[in-house]
Image (cartoon, rainbow, N blue to C red; front, side, top):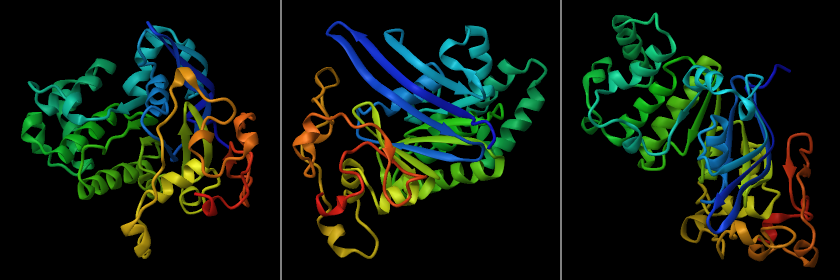
Length: 331
């Protein structure tokens, strides 16, 4: 097997606040191979965006980071500033949540796409940069003439395509997309996701796609990791984790979406009672047990770790002491 583009090992991220320390990520490990798409799912506050920002070391100064984050074999956590500046955009780039707030409203989009090219390669002139901008815009399904447009002249889907073009400007090996379709309607969302997955196949890059929507990830990614309270509670092949979840939280996420051909799910999708726990006051044992219909007495005492589970034990890891039993009957 080739060296992974991204290799996160036992990542812990804790924010220092006036109210005390807040553990946002607690021991996350995952990897991405060239040409592979990996999704990370979970509710707001589960730590998925913190994982994304840590890959490019974009977290605030109040964050304490422990563990290892290897991009192309280099540990980002201990990387010097000069080397980190080279890595950003050129080796790994990010598509931020909300293109409306990520684009400069007073600059033409062509100039914004060209900026990282010229910063990372001083030999790229205006003519070459403009040619490359036109190619990128056409690659994401926009006319090259759009380079002269300002952000307010574009629709939400077009802005998001511009963000994708910008992320590809310096030919990175890894792209991190933090909920890139949150503000888009369903049709535009599908179009943007098709563009992203097509580019992954065409260019052989690695993609980490962050979303709260398990159904989107299951149809877009090769593998999915489900996070809860700062940890990965299940990881598996994308289709299997949606159709046959082994962790009760994964099952609850999957059950929240209507299924084609199942009228019952259309009219009464299952819900999940309660709220995610306060990171500063995590429950004892399994952090999900207060909301879990499948919990037993041991769940309040035992803190489960990721272990092989289910029929596809070589592909699936689950953090649940009841993994392997029929989750669907209990959710």
